[in-house]
Image 1 (spheres, rainbow, N blue to C red):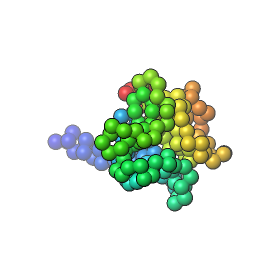
Image 2 (cartoon, one colour):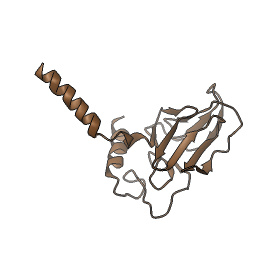
Image 3 (cartoon, rainbow, N blue to C red):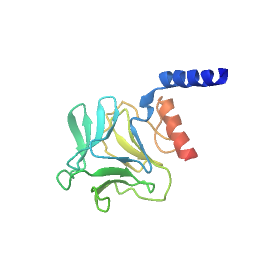
Length: 163
């Protein structure tokens, strides 16, 4: 009984002190963003819109888009295990946009960074090119310059090594 109470208490405590936003800006290999879903970092939002346009917003200003709006409705974005980020039509059998970063199968992550850039890592494979100079970037050792966001680096490193 004491062990059960301790475990419940520890779980609640860890749930309260653990920041839930650590992965709100990451899409892992095998994951998708459905219509209306997004990932965020501060004022930046990377969203799969209803009109099938994949858009990066700085607050409410679009700063990058896949230019696929109107080609279909209800698309989804997929971070594939080959490193390619792809917008698929609802049936999933037709790609209407891709980052064209496919390579060897492995563990990749698509990250919306604090500098406003969206980057695919295994090694850096693709980016929107929308980073604000001087804001710093989040990187994976050996693939990009580092900054002080140690928690993000640990999270990415853990995912790339353990999955």
